[in-house]
Amino acid sequence: MIISSNIKKYRELKDMTQENLAEQMNISRQSISKWERGDALPSVENLIRLSELLDLSLDDLVLNQSEFPLPFDYGTFKSKWVYFGWMFMPIFFIVNGLFALSYAGEGWYYVIGGLLMGGLIQETAMVDLKRYYNYFTVTKTGIFYYSSKYYIPKPIKIILGVFGSRQVEFVSYKDIEEMQIYFGNNGFQGFNTTVSYRPRQYFYNRELFELRLTLKDGQTVHLNLDRAFFSDSLERRYFLAMFNYFKGQNVPLEDKYNVINSIEKEYSIIDEAYKLKEGF
Image (cartoon, rainbow, N blue to C red; front, side, top):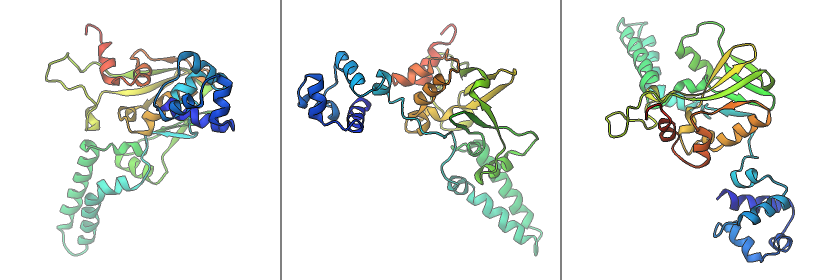
């Protein structure tokens, strides 16, 4: 549990033993031990006292919002091998086809087949290879996001992203007028229908889920938030911490789909967003 691990972590950072902390709180050492093991939870009064003694806000003590690694890449893959794993067969066909062109005209069939296979994987597979270039990076002073000044075919953008050569723009927090968490809740027609509204296995038919930045110069920047759908992702783990950091930078946030509340209380992001649909 977050509370349990935080009590132990910040107690040790203060160079306090369980006995020291228990003495200052006028409780038994066994109570501290039970809290740190997760066998029991502190009362509200004890939580307030703990936050004072450990020099933490209640949010930091309970929600773990103080830990946010910067810079933070939201949405990208951690390895190039995801790309090569999915694209091995298309690349194999294309390379063999190119070699075959030198002695047999049939090599074009392999090249075309490899290109078609690669395009099909990129558009309909269970993995969104666009994550190699359309992720954003949160830093201490602002956000880096993908932006191309001229047209580049999607396969080329993916390859450039794989090798760390994507084109980016930077926006500082002071240049952001407002942030808005947007969830496209227009596809679901009601419970007990044939329309599924869970996070799709296939990225191409998920609800649109993004962070929209309205800049002071009138521009709007769209940042994909899909990875928060997955409870085991780093993006989901640090979602609250990220928006807490934005709040600390005095950036106004609109969250009319209650995404922050859903993640904080471990509700389904999708269920809660659809409940807010007009006429639901």
